[in-house]
Image (cartoon, rainbow, N blue to C red; front, side, top):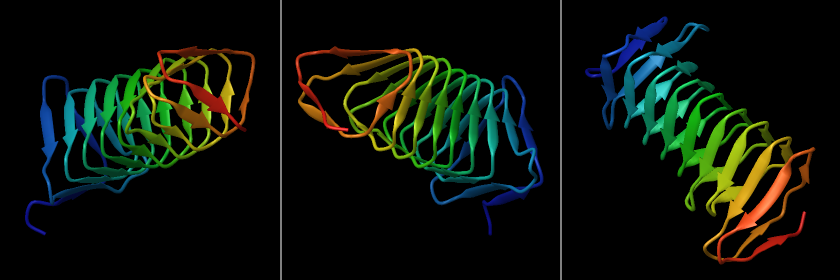
Length: 171
């Protein structure tokens, strides 16, 4: 299709910006996937696994697993797992499991549909965590409105409730 691109693997170098526009698709077919060392904006569709070492914005759809060592903003859908060693903000949907070892913020419109393994800092400003949580570090429910958490929290980490809203734990 005109405007779509299929490649075996791809590296975006530092200082380079790649935009996958609305209605367009970038397909990365090789197991090594896509490596981003620049800026990647996914407004359309990215299919394939990716490693982000710099700046990435997913406001469209990514189907594949994402290893984040940089900064990622997921406002659309990540249909895959997230391995976060960088800084991640989720105001959209992550369908797979999340392994967090640094900083993850779940915004009010965010939805983590898989299990969460936390060895870093997770701040939930509302949103949904549908799976079970293994928390070995810091999990903060920063609620401005009332909410319910109905999954299981286990692990050796701390759980803090912050903000004026209430959190009901029913898991």
